[in-house]
Image (cartoon, rainbow, N blue to C red):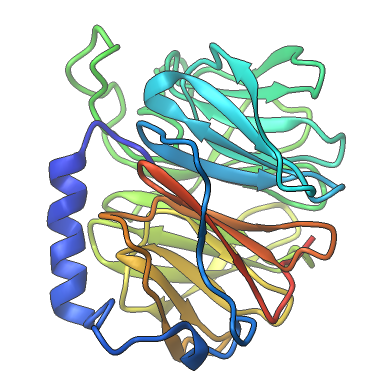
Length: 305
């Protein structure tokens, strides 16, 4: 997700390009089975400072952030783009809960916030055991209403502090209704993208600095177990479709099937892809937040709801 980090992301992008051959010149959308035959990337007319964190509501409307400008935008099922909210607490990653609130990683004050569609804001979490979080970055809400989120540290120019309070960068779980989060993985270097399966049994987390994506079993109490390497590739944001395919954002969009086999790379004409999600009435429209630009792509598969 967005950091002040263009140099860091450019460096990671170059590493990814070199290691995995992303965006080769002969890559075509038609060679990727999850893309609708004949589909092309459609660029939205608006320019952004750094678009990020898309999330879809029950109608299929997609909301996404422009964190440097502190805004949340809405792209509706009719293709209309409009400003939803200004002054968002520097919202980054977003996800809708069962109450149709936008749950946001808002790192101006290092909080998790819930935002209703009438723009009422509730702070869900603002510390861990009395310490300031690094900067909540990306999140996924399970079917019980619990929130898994990543908390890497990226220095912001709007912070007074110059170093983290926390000793590491962790993955957390906040049970529904609780004000106390628990650490569910303390071993990653820089956890970033995160997504789970709709059945609540499996979680995926990307460690962007270790260039790995991990798969976990979700236990009944929200804890994680049986961690396995899913892909030898990190990512910024990620999403999942109903067939279990995982989409990793970075240099273009790299798609893996449920077994971790690479299906291909969707080349995106931008320096970096920060995140993506499925939207539209049938959840068959992929919206891609690619730093200064946002694209849509018609898919042959549907996103999970």
